[in-house]
Length: 164
Image (cartoon, one colour):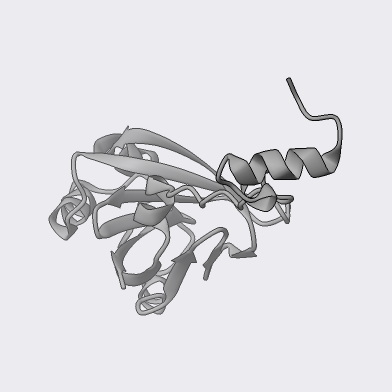
């Protein structure tokens, strides 16, 4: 039988060994702990352009591609790259892709394919496509990842990236 008066309830709660504030749920629930996003942890870094491979159907000169060396592609909740500009918040998709198919799409020579492989990209890479949620005019960024090595292609040139 429940007490009818509040003072009786408080007395009953004290007898039961708990204070009224300790027996009731908090007024505001505790904030949930942020989820660890393993994909974002793998991807979210400053990536340094270390090398490049020029495709056969590009309008970018070898010298223009060389000038990108040392530049940074930064990925976090959004992304910034020398080719795509900046995006504050990005959606992403993930799939496994074949390095042979990717380099064939960009029309890399066999020597260019060998360079990408020698750089440290695996036969199968994790492909992330980042699409800007905050600015639809910002072009999507696709990055192909194998551990601390990655590649992104733009304008018929594939830039080989190392994680900083």
